[in-house]
Length: 578
Image (cartoon, rainbow, N blue to C red):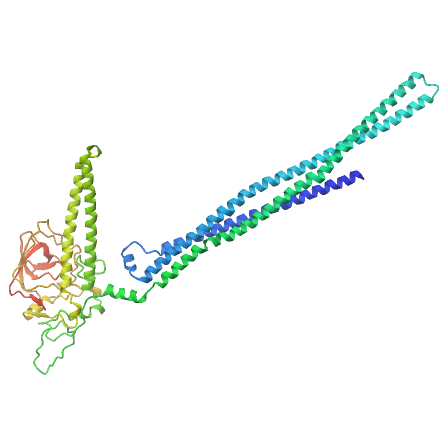
């Protein structure tokens, strides 16, 4: 019965250990499952932040001229601000991912590693204690069997002695031998009894310690371990929410920035900016004069008229088509599209041309300042080399200084050129106070003058504009005395389209002398040799080109800066701007 009861206890203890082992293993796996969940959430945050950043970068304005154009409008600036705030918003999701990794995933990984080692140690101690009590029980059972066997042997020896002692036929020596054997067996039984009693006492102590101390302590440690696991899981779940909550203030600021940017959008300001950007500077046309065909016409040519008279062959109005420029697109002339206009921006309306020229002058001044800063720095370096020859050769700086000086000279020449064009534009632009008073009338000296000078309408494609050259009657144009090398013609050679086709031969209005050789590779130009004399048939109209003729079959355009022009006093085409 005792053996059965002990067997049941040990079996029950083993079952309890197996149940605890399964439960604690499931708890560890559950923590690993939660850690995997947080890791996947972190990856989602990283990917989301990456996609948001890519989206913001995709719609950021590119580094080109269009960016400067867009930055003028409030709605464009608001969108850029929203993109920047969105980029910061993506950064907060990266912070969430980093905090999830550092505060939960890394900590749980370390905790799980310690938890597994602790669990393994506790179950190892439990199995060791169980094995020890089972071993003590086996020793107790062995001593008990030995005591039982010795007791039986002692009884047999005593009974044998008593039979020998009662038998009269047995010798005294045999009786003595039987008596000694009985005494020895009794002694062995007594020793076995003492050993059994000792083992029994020891087992009872160990069993009591096993069931009341060792096993409860192990179970308590397992319980504490399980509670710490559950508590750590709860802390991680709280941290999971706190990580999101920590970035909410910054996310709110990002959203507030987007809202503030949207509230800064001003439609009126943007519309005024459009007006300012595309303001042409043209004056509205004047009233159309009544033409009384019942009487002899006494009309002076007016550049404000939108109609062509029947005598247009003799007195064509150069401004007739100009008044419709804002609404007309010339499909035939494609040479002056945006970005391909002449260097002086003469293809633009006056106001736009003035802005472009002013912007170009500002850029040149900035370039000059950069070159001057470099020159000053190199000059200081040269002074240092002069004072401390061991640091460098002063003459090594001279080539660069010479190059910078040449660059500054070129840039200053460019500034003078653009400032001249700017002064010309500002001089010709009508003042706001005279808008309703002046009509920009051209007074021609004779009908052929108007015919020749206005044959080439100054209209440009897509509603663009080319300034009229103010060519007052003069005997001679004084050539440039600039000692600089041969000037370059306008950087963007114009395409003269079909200006020579279907046109009557123009009369000569003067002569010119070529100051420099010109190849004339572009269509519509003519090559000239230095010192060659040519006939002028159309003077420069502000685009930097003069039309000349060599003979009846050869005529074309040459750069105005390449020739010295001598106009006839009564030259056809001379006109005065009122």
